[in-house]
Amino acid sequence: MKKITKICCIGAGYVGGPTMSVIASQCPEIQVTVVDINEDRIAQWNTEDLDKLPIYEPGLKEIVGKSRGKNLFFSTAVDKAIDEAQMIFISVNTPTKTYGKGKGQAADLKFIELCARNIAKVAKDDKIVVEKSTLPVRTAQAIQNILDNTGNSVKFEILSNPEFLAEGTAIEDLLHADRVLIGGNDTPSGQEAKDALSEVYEHWLPKERILQTNVWSSELSKLVANAFLAQRVSSINTISALCEKTDANIQEISRAIGFDSRIGSKFLNASVGFGGSCFQKDILNLVYIARSYGLQEVADYWEQVIIANDYQKSRFAENIISTLYNTISGKKIVLYGWAFKKDTNDTRESPAISVADALLEERAEIIVYDPKVSAERIYADLDYLGTRPPEENRKLLTVTNDPIKATEAAHAIAILTEWDEFKTYDWEAIYRQMLKPAFVFDGRRLLDTATMEQIGFNYYKIGQS
Ligand code: UDX
Ligand code: UDX
Image 1 (cartoon, rainbow, N blue to C red):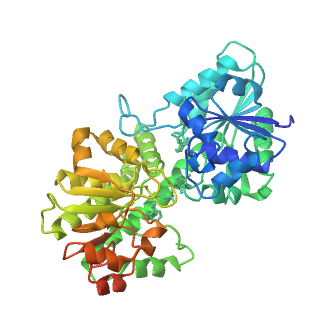
Image 2 (image 1 turned 90 degrees about the vertical axis):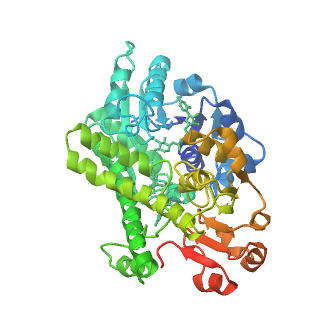
Image 3 (image 1 turned 90 degrees about the horizontal axis):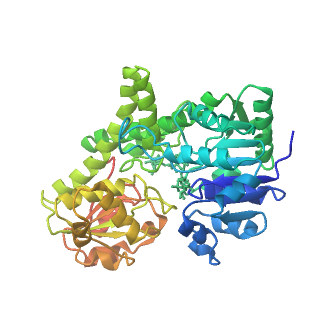
């Protein structure tokens, strides 16, 4: 088997950037080049000041600092990097289609196809092409077809190597992965390719955690893993609604059921809803695939996970409105957090977006604070919904970098992301300067009920009456 000495990754995003940085740092003898068509993004990856990398992930800047310029490169020279590499990762985004067949559900594969065509055009020798993006089942076949019909005699071996890292803990997840999944053809050349990729990971992971499967199993496993995780969150969130009506406490329930080793304790935190680039998209994909095979009941079953999540987000917003005496027009409401979870600047599908949108519909005056998300991003997220003109969004919603001052004369605060810093605020001082009665709606169960009530807040926590 040929030793891998040069890797290229197309797509310098949340997945490609951290994954390649870790590979480079763990495999000093492999040259890793991450390419992207977005010049700004590449320029940001190359900035001198490591605090200005385009992606915020704990531990990332240290790893990039260690390897960049040695065996880790960020570049816009896509063709050159493809040409030189023996192994090419495709890590471009696959958004949900916003048009045509499968609109709102199916994954838009146009970027993947563009990458495949580009590889076909440039390659002069045999390549291993690795799907890193989460894709609908059978995409590898589509890529294979494009690559096999290029007319030159180059041989391509396609592998599926889905990413299981969670944002905010990406570096940890990569360094200490529970498992790495490598799907490939059951042919001698397919086996050789799988082994070549296994060897890359074996630089830092024990062999038994590297699982080889066929391509379809690998692709489908990724969708199913995310669907199961999201299902846990939706399951516990539906029970949080029940707890709010009764004297049961969702945290006590999570703890009680989590002790059952068959259930386990992770992913049982009730919240304002799950977000992120993957959960919703992957379930929609699963639903679309099931439906396209005529499996209506299977599709409906998984779709319910998304319906429950939408319910949780709108329930949270409606509770704010009804608690503030059914009118929030002109009331100042401060949102703490915009990212879909802590320790990331990613806002894709963040519940904060729909909560803010619902409050803006009632003409509240919103102030947003998030330690890592830019004002530009926040406005882009809202404008994308198209609920109202962009000018209106800017008039009703402002973004601040002073979370404490923002609460002066505010009617309410809603916690939408579980940033640790919110726990350290001087909540007594905040209380003093808010209008009374002062309301806090905690969508992340971050603060202590007794303390907040003692200060004088009307404090509402997801999953508690
Ligand atoms: C990833 C995966 O690829 C996606 O399938 C998974 O489900 C979620 O995460 P992510 O890395 O988060 O995507 O996406 P993003 O941060 O948008 O990065 C993708 C990058 O690819 C962008 O920087 C974009 O400019 C680049 N790109 C896109 C190309 O370089 N070429 C293209 O043709 C299209
Ligand atoms: C997820 C998967 O975990 C990862 O394996 C996959 O590769 C990509 O998708 P990510 O979306 O980055 O990762 O974050 P994750 O930690 O899974 O959280 C997803 C959402 O669920 C977040 O909005 C989070 O706040 C929410 N969540 C998670 C809860 O509300 N409660 C929980 O108990 C856990």
